[in-house]
Image: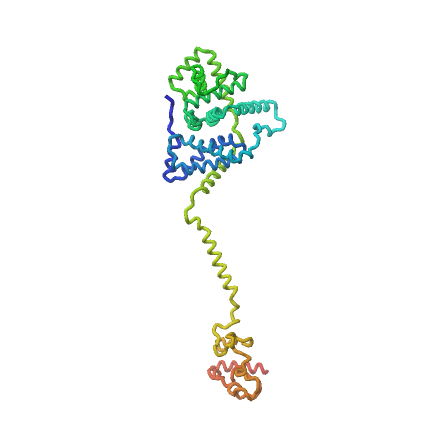
Length: 184
Length: 215
């Protein structure tokens, strides 16, 4: 039987429903980092991510009193964040710059070791970008956002088992793309 | 042909899926699944190699720095708080909050308008004697204000019946008095009864002043 834990945010949502607005501030403090990192993977600039996270929390504030608690608060917030990011991308499709590898412009002549590390990171990111959307979503939520498969399934709108299968295929595909020691 | 359809139900793939999930976190598997995988890893070197490769890959992925620069989290928290406050439904009276400064401004403007339109004090009498009003109802230009005996008196210097300056013979004897000169005082010389009311000290001072003046 899979281990299930009580939602640590449940108490805050109850306090919010009772009219305690500071409970929402605590939710913001608790989840803003994760939401920002999630949103930042969709939108390609920090400033845009800051706008989107504000929008996401405003929506969460409006909807929290009607939150039914069938999912965890975290996965509910992350779902709002993903929806806001996708909506923002639709509205600003033509404004999105072509993505440049992280750190590519930070140093003119990076040291060889640093160059190797940067290449390694860039190679990994490029490999992730080649994944099918669902596998990419599941892998990122699991690896970068550290969500349980149950939460990943809620966000990916699939069963928990399907989330695990997608995760497995994402890892397998990455091993194929990267080759070398990772090759299956 | 490579099989990458997630919905494929295959025993081998199922084992591989379990292995990936096992490497990624044993809490995601049931105790029975964990037990089966542990047995397989113990007897299958290839499974162990797969396990190590998956573990290395996931460690590399998790070591990737987050995309973008880390923002100032406190500043972001404040901006989120402000955005939420702005989005809150406002109470009805908040929509009338412009009324107080508008009313203050209107009142100040009205007061300034009234002050600006009023003539300076003293140009027009508060009450104008009806029998001295010109025909058009407004005081004439020859009217002067005199402060006499503690009262303000408007005098029309053009009115000959008051000044008697046209012909000495026409002058009112009561105004001219004993003095036969053509100059007419505004106060009748006979109207000096107030002198009788002066006490001895006042009279002494007056005589002293006159003597000093003449001297």
